Length: 444
Image 1: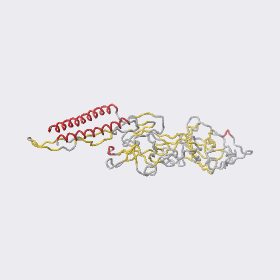
Image 2 (image 1 turned 60 degrees about the vertical axis):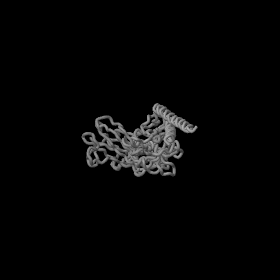
Image 3 (image 1 turned 45 degrees about the horizontal axis):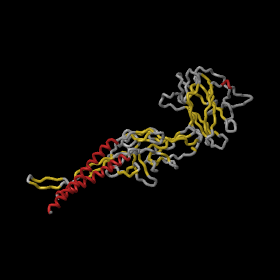
């Protein structure tokens, strides 16, 4: 009976080492698989039998079995790539993906993503990457993560200008010029012509209508007294017709124009006489209401916002911007270091589409492999903690891919030891066979 037990101990060794060799073979086969996590075989002895002898009871082992095949989730090295949608994770997090029509979350470390024909960010197998979307104001949308999709894959619609921000400096040493307007701001080219010499400084600003067509308006600054200026404007519609009765310098808001009043330090004062250092400061603005460019676009209301100083320096434009834009074609979609998918258009606009979410598990070794570099959660892995990239869940690296964490040298050493184990167990079987042969020959 003891000899037969030794025979089956050798068989268990052959089976266990065969499985271990399969694990090693799988590791080596995936040395170039993106995001692959290698495995190791953990052996354990089988339940021992008890024998009695003159010295008391003893135990004799019955062989070996595989206790567990562990996944090793150590960090893999990064490979730099030229694709803007290739990303890698530094840390313990996983990308979250879902199959179309299936709410089961899948997890992966392989970040070779791309956009499909419908604008969804997917992995090579077509599973959709999950993230938190942004609304029209660029704020994250509350709620559960969803599919990352770029909807404006063709032409992005134009947006009419609603706000123009002007950042100027007006020269405090400029002379006060004779007024060229009546109290009502009326314009009479024969009896009350506008004298260009009454304008201290002028500058043009670009804006857009609802169809995305660009137009220019010109702002005129006239110094009326020490620390006091008036602002007027002019513009034309698509046919070259003045937008207002006074083609050169119409009042912005009644009277002779918007007054700009500065303090002794050159700071702009609001209607309450305080500058922007006061917490109750009200920004100085003026409306341009119902501008109709006569080209089929909708009339637009524009607010002019002044961020102006009056220092003893030449009058100049420090900066100006507006919130409108023309229609534009999608030129590029990339992912930044925060994991945010950003779409860029030919009109210079960039839209935040969504930020990838990452998942982390208390026991990643309990995840179940489902192929294609993906895992699913199990009771053993625990519940996934999902959130935006960061110190806890992992940091995103763009234009990078994580390589397999398999150490080929270590695997070859394990291959040698596993081969020796297999040979030793096969030798047990042949030796036991010889012993059984000798036992049978005893009756001869």
